[in-house]
Amino acid sequence: MFKKILIANRGEIAVRIIRACKEWGISTVAVYSDVDKESMHVRLADESICIGPHQPVNSYLNIPAIMSAIELTNSEAVHPGYGFLSENHNFAKILEESNIKFIGPSSRLIKMMGDKIQAKKIAKENGLPVIEGSEGGVSNLDEAKKVCKKIGFPVLIKAAGGGGGKGMKIVNNENEFEKLFIMAKSEAQKYFGNDEVYIEKFFENPRHIEVQIMSGKNRTVHLHERDCSVQRRHQKLIEETPSPILNDKIRKDLFEKTVSMVSKIGYEGAGTVEYIYQDKKFYFLEMNTRVQVEHPVTEMVTGIDIIKEQIWIAFTGDTALKQTDIAPRGHAIECRINAEDAGKNFQPSPGIIGMCHQPSGFRTRVDGSIYQGYKVTPYYDSMICKVITQGRNRQEAIQRMQRSLDEFVIEGISTTIDLHKKLLEHEKFLKSDFNVSWLDNDKII
Image (cartoon, rainbow, N blue to C red; front, side, top):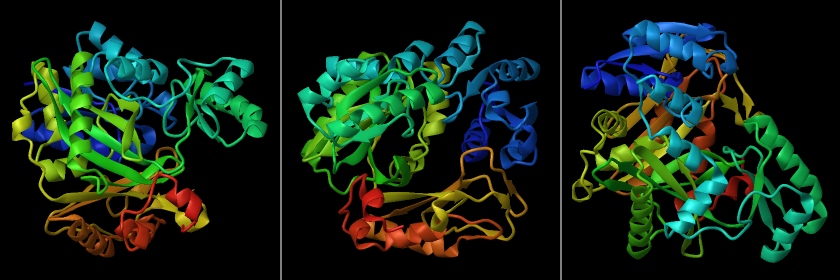
């Protein structure tokens, strides 16, 4: 096994990776920016090294600084977590050329699946249903209008190299198309350094379903699906597994096609294939070539440590998992807790945490990096932890989550804990009668 792994990330995911490494007996190296010196991931790692000032571009996105940290600590491998450099094919390629193992797929596959247009073509070629729209990127307005005329409004303009809702615009009619097309291209250039966009038919009432896969040279397996349909402005708030709306026939078709596609492209590592689901039909959305924020719900029902399996695949090239060994049990739910004030349009709430009491108990898990006295800075993503609960069924998982959130005390900053309490008791959530547009349209927040 690897002797030393550098974690090129921060916060709760860095803590999560350190824990998995410790169970493997692997030494860990934490990297941190100047404002993260007292962070939990720095305290838990065997070694730590400062890689720059607080601006991400000067620290957690600073490839030369991270490469220097790898060299100084003699690290054999790098785990990128999610976000930051996790889907940066240039970073993965530099590591490959330096004989440092990137814990994830090859740089070629990251580049291939990171380009949304290319990924859609690959999915279609390998038997996955795709959303009707442009065959590739659209560079000018006239070409874009022709696509819209063919598929009809409403349409969705998306950045080819994007994600997280950036460079994404919903267009309801021809009159507003030109303005939003220009805005989407401008945002794509700003956030991803690439103004290429593509156009798809917009689904008004879809669910967001994703399939967790683990793949090695020997085989590809799926760890069933997650339903991530509780979203606000394309950002996930609550995730659960299994999805309450799928039947066994649809699941079987979804899993078989997903595994087939991932296997055919020669993928290695953990990955997630995301779908839009509406009217009992699913359509390929994108593939994330990394571990997801919501991976713990899958771990709770399958009993499989996804991070440890990622490390095993990176070291051996093969997955130790067999499909027949994967038997999900019960239902799991995850609530993302952000340092935000939901009553003030989700304004970030940095500050020093006062009293901090985290929930525990039967089948209750908290993945986080916070503690009493911890300073939440305004420089990074506002998610500070995740609460995950499991029950014998969905109702019990919800009840356990409600109990856990009632136990959770975080003083000194505003959080989204009360928002989650409100959502969990809402009739639409309890009946699973919602879609990705629920919170944006109903204005219940």
